[in-house]
Image 1 (cartoon, rainbow, N blue to C red):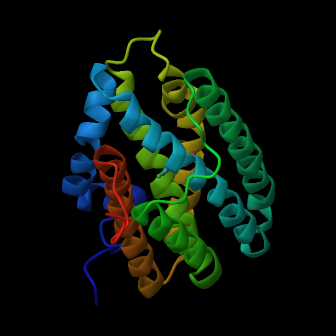
Image 2: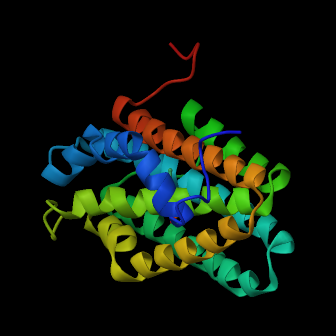
Length: 227
Ligand code: MP5
C-alpha cells in the first residue's frame, strides 16, 4: 500500500497533496523565472520563450479538455465546455500581447520540456482514468494561479506583462480553481484506494512538469542535438 494518499485523517485530497508536495510547490513558486518577472528584471527574450511555448501548451489543452468530456459525469460537461471557451480567449490574449511587443507566436516548435508535458497531457486524457486526468487539470491550473500570484505581488500594474497576471491571478480564475478543487476532492472521496494513489502520482508529476516548464523558459532550453 502506498503512502501517497490515504483517507484516514479525513483531510480533503487537494489539501493532503499540497501538504505532501509542499517542498516541490515551494520550489515552483520560488523559481527565478517568476521572481525576475515579479521584479521587472526578466529579459524580454526569455519572456518571449515562455509566451511562445505556453501558447502551444494552451492550444494543446483544448483537445485535452475535449477528450475528457465524453468520460466526464454529466454535471461536468458544461463546465468543461466553458474551459474550452476560456482557453480560446486565452490564446487571443497571447496573440494580442505578442503583437503588442513584436513576438512571433506561430511556427515555433515545442521545446523539449513542453513537448513532453503536452504528450503527458494527451496521454493522460486518453489512457488514464477520469479522476486522474481531472487531477492533472486541477494541479496545472492551481500551479498557474499560485505562480502568477507570486508575480502579482511585485509586478508594476503598467507592465506589458500585467495582462497575464490579471488572467491567472485574478478573482475569476481563483473561483474557477476553487470549483475544480471541490470537484476533485469529491472524485477522490469516491475513489478506491488504488485510484486515489494514482491520482496522487499524477498530482506530483504535474507539479514536476510545472517546475520544468519555468526552467525551460528561464534557460531558453534547446533540444538535444540542437547545438
Ligand atoms: C497552465 C498554462 C494553466 N497555461 N501553462 C502551463 C505550463 N501550466 C498551466 O492552464 P490554462 O489552461 O492556460 O489556464
